[in-house]
Image (cartoon, rainbow, N blue to C red; front, side, top):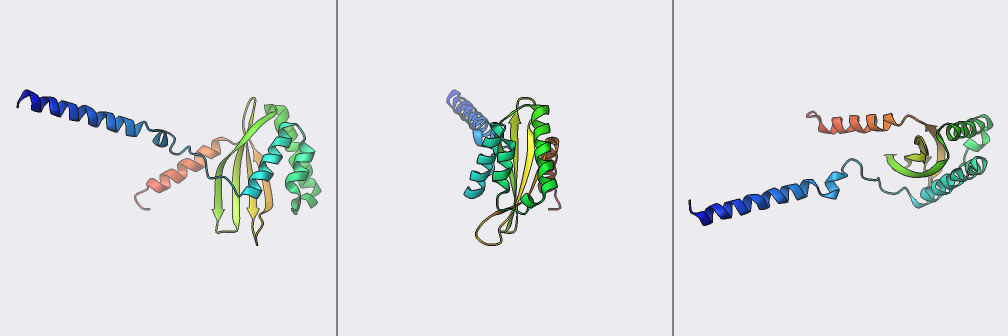
Length: 169
């Protein structure tokens, strides 16, 4: 083999290595599995943003009046009191709410939607699940659930990944 052939092979090999490394380290692949879900429908996004902005201001009662407007939940006084108490307890335990992000959306057909949010606090995030129903042209809030079971977010995603990787699927 001549020196020029050897040099061409080395250049091509190095170029291939750089291409593979560049592809593997590209931002799209580096964030795979962590990419933000698409934004919720606009009316829901506005409602969630207003809700969490009120919580950031420690206006818990006002936040629930806003998010529960036009829902059947607002008529269940014990449930509403429980949600407010749970929210106050979480803020007292983990610190004030600093912000939020939508981390997951699940649809069942075209009329059911669950949005999972994380609220950030000084000490620990909270998981919020909002379930919506759309019988016509508007989304209606059916249920709110808040907890600190952050590990379940990873467990649920891991099980879905394993199911997708399964040779039987």
